[in-house]
Image (cartoon, rainbow, N blue to C red):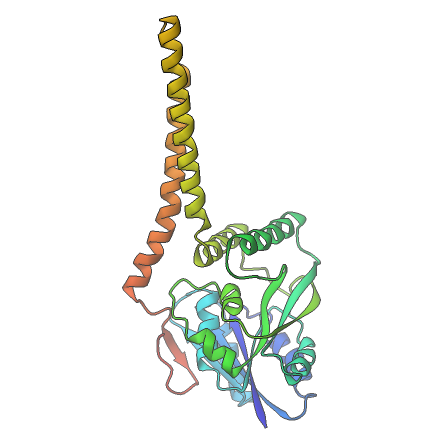
Length: 314
């Protein structure tokens, strides 16, 4: 029988792990012809998450866990889980049950139909603020316009992939990872299925608005050079406007013989242009910082303990 690996990143999820495992096992136990393995990745949790995972692994031999030396982030946790997976197919899903386990049966059906990947996207964000939902939609539309990847609006990390696609994703070794973009960049035939998102079963989201904003910047910088082109365009535009203004001032002074006053306007213009220059430097700095971090070739994570064999830092 073929094996399906379920990769589950966890960060301070002691309140929901048992519920997730129970609901997920209820679904997987009803699916025939497949063997399931769980790979929980403890991303440096400070609560009892690791102890609960150890307890589950003693009760169920299909439960495996990886525990980081500290919090390295969800991207690193997903990478560690994918790297450690041995299944013919691999599923990535969140532990908070906002990714409905019942979709697993639908995913398997489409995989059996010949798709390389089956991904879930939210069509309705129940329990989420309109402010956050609005900016989320705008982000996907913007990144699709300025990058060479096309990410579905409402796309999540919840998906099932063939081993071939997983190996392709793992072949990309960049330090700064935007997995939603990587999934699309590697290609392969993907079937999108829709679902409604609800509040977490228990606990609070670990993603603040600032965290999501930084994640959005990561996505834009990882898959587009448009910000650099925009800053160049703005620089050229202001250079042309400055030349026109200089020519206008010079001609008027020759005709009237009177110098044009304007200390206040000069200060405003200089201050404004200084701000534009700082923004441009910030954009350039974002790209240069990524080159710098990539050149260090630091591991993306360190594994402190695991019940998997031959685990090491990546």
